[in-house]
Length: 232
Image (cartoon, rainbow, N blue to C red; front, side, top):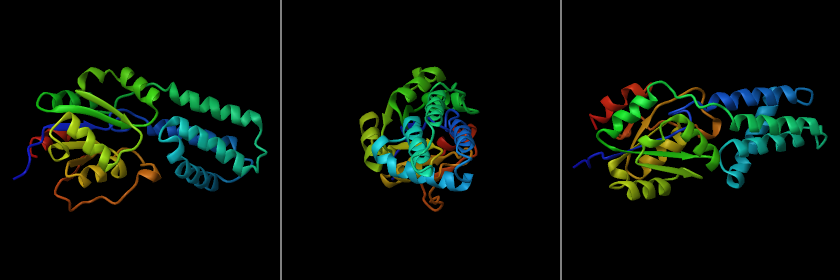
């Protein structure tokens, strides 16, 4: 017998509000500042490699991204990167931390509708202060029954969160734009996963969609969330 769905978790970045665009703009600026040292493709490959190495040290978010840009700039110039470029990259990181919060289409309506019949959670990873800032500016903070800002989205993390806030992962659903972080670990612990893709996913968040999994669903946007939830 299928366990009844009682708790819905929402990812934050690029599920409820825009984030990817700010990383893309900053990457373009990074490429412009380093254009005299290497081609953009090589630079982005080196930056991605630095991000991959540094996740375990700095976690996800703007601060780790900024440090990875600086590390890449040092590597790509054999330590000769001008101090002015480092200062500009630090300024770019600070600018990202000041970026306005713009909700994605149907985000507010989806959370309001979900909380009428289910417990709703915000489950996000990244810089604690930055995520708290974005949640406060989003106007959505009072709508959630619980907020979890974690360093990594793992099966163990989802099992703990849904056990604490509801009847466990098998009676929960996770809604998000990352196959790697929002979908696969939630399915691993027996929950539902609703994939809502947005933009071009970060390379480290890409994974193969489990299209044959009975608890996996994909939506083009959040407008279809409650009609789907009503069928689960």
